[in-house]
Length: 134
Image (tube, rainbow, N blue to C red):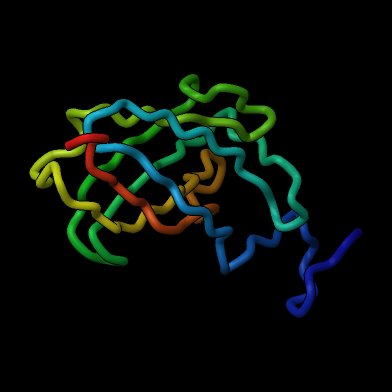
C-alpha cells in the first residue's frame, strides 16, 4: 500500500485538495472541443464509467455562471481510462463583445456514482479570444 503524505491515507482513497491547473483557450466564433483525462493522486487514470463529469465556467471563482456542461455515464470517450470531452459551440458563449478577450475560470468536477462525492480534478483560466480579424 502506498500512502499519501502528510495524511497517511491509502493513495487510492486520497484525492488531492489542490486540483491540477491548466489554461483553456478558445475563439469566440468557433466551436472548440476540450478533452480531459481524470487522474488520482498518483497520476493514474480514474475509471469514470458510472460517474458524471461537469465543466463549469464562471467569470471569477465563485462568480457568475457563464457556461456549464455535464457528461453523464455513457457520454465519455474512454471511461475506463478517465477520458471525457466537452464541445463548446459558438452559441454557448453569449453576450460577449466580439472585439474583447475574456479571462474567466473553469473547473472539471467528477461526481462519483458510488458515493455521490464530488471531486475537482482540474481548474484554471478559461480564455475567450475575439475572432481573428474581428
